[in-house]
Image (tube, helix red, strand yellow):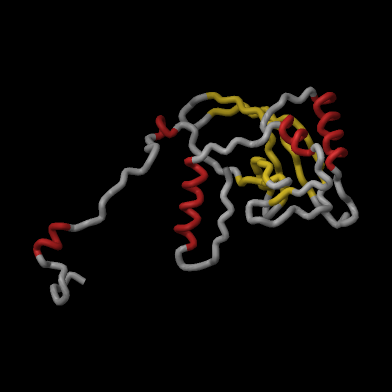
Amino acid sequence: MSFLINLTPVKGEIVARKKIIQIHRNITIKSMKLSEIKSSLNGLSEITFRLPNGEAVPAHFHITEIGQINKRFIDCGGTVRNDKAISFQLWEDGDFDHRLGAQKLIDIIELSERVLELEDLEVEVEYQGDTIGKYSLEFHDSEFQLVAKMTDCLAKDKCGIPAEKPKVRLSMPSIQSSGACVPGGGCC
């Protein structure tokens, strides 16, 4: 599931962005596996990658790399973790006549599988914006959707971060019952 939310710069923009981040943290986004990408490519006449803001990656894009990333790391709670993913790097330049067809991409993927002995893992897409962004991948309406990836603490239980913030009722019955905050009461 992905959300496309168009934000207009207004006074509450920062609050709106925090809500989007909270939505992403509460949803586990699964990216497509390599086999699912190959299946989705079958029958496509052209390939479209759509950015989270709704814009399409220019049609003259290249896929400059396909590889397997093996990441071994320790989280802030001291747990050693291993993560593996397939990486696609999308790139575009002034080569406006270039078009990568679906069958050609299938051929590149199959060559990568044979030569690199790739596993059928989730695919992470890198694309150059202001910096290199990393995205999960979904397929809807004959287009590949780049879904923004978010950072998160993997050891919330060890860091003392509550799973959900406690809800606090913002009422002041003592002030209301004492009449201290009424027009002319001097509280405001």
